[in-house]
Image (cartoon, rainbow, N blue to C red):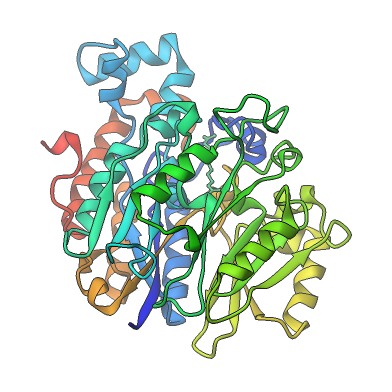
Length: 445
Ligand code: SUG
């Protein structure tokens, strides 16, 4: 059956800021306390969405979460009016205020793992919200993410939604950032590739020394069971622990795949040859085209600085592929020259497009982090909430909405300002009407 890939980008929320919350994510730590520009952040994201839609790719948008999250603060013992809660938390724990204010749900590659209907035994598209429990500020995302996913993909005949896995580190799950699907064609059964950082229930198994391995194999195995994926459609790989220790906190910082192509760094996986041959063996109707970037071409450090692999690999109508990278790729010399020769190499990737996503990049979020891929048949696509699909009108409307509600400067002190909370609630209330989401936010109930 004919199917297409749709990319659902996270709309950057009004409290986008730099709080250095993600140990192991180099950019997040380097930019701690920088002044952010939420308005520009949202517009950079919208420009990418619209440009890709203009080029003929199918593009959707996912709504941001309400922040600061006062309810979470109440569960931690802060009481009184919203204003009192904000004043008190900023006095006793500014880092806690920063955590409940993060706009981190913009990185929708971490929202969920999605398996297309061609791969699953019951023929439904399966979604499992990611528990993101490696970081407190991200662990508070999954409940609302689930509601937004259910509102966006509502028809139970086609879509199966699973709540996040148990929120303990043994089941640490970071969603599609560690999941890639290969296929001969989007509409036929493919191979789902799950990359994990450690084995939680085997203390002797290899793991990084310095930075946390956020994804466990136990979590990936649970998602495979929930999604009813048969063994012959699944491959697991361990991320190389030393690579995680260089700042590669998700697999999508060191490899990207699409169709029959895997674009990867030689330091990405622990057991590369075995993994590649299993992928090739399980991929039906085509063979794997593995494009390896060696240390001699680009070091892991340069890959992390440029976010070369945190790119979108998109199939064009003629079957060739386009790589969507952040502009940082032209600032790192080894990466710029690598990309120049990649497009001339005669391989699958013959076009590179660059986007300025600096506001998100400074928190470690490139083009691939900002989008969730969902492969849908035409029938399934017709069952998606149509108001979240990008169009000329929606682009104009969302830009006007951002202009009306967003600040162009935000510092750590501003997070305690109760008018920021009110501004965000007013903005999101209006957004639910634009995107016809219903009352998904708790402040609307
Ligand atoms: O989880 N950064 C995010 C970046 C997520 C990138 N996603 C993918 N690779 N798919 C994270 O580390 C930083 C927030 C701060 O420091 O203010 C942050 O959460």
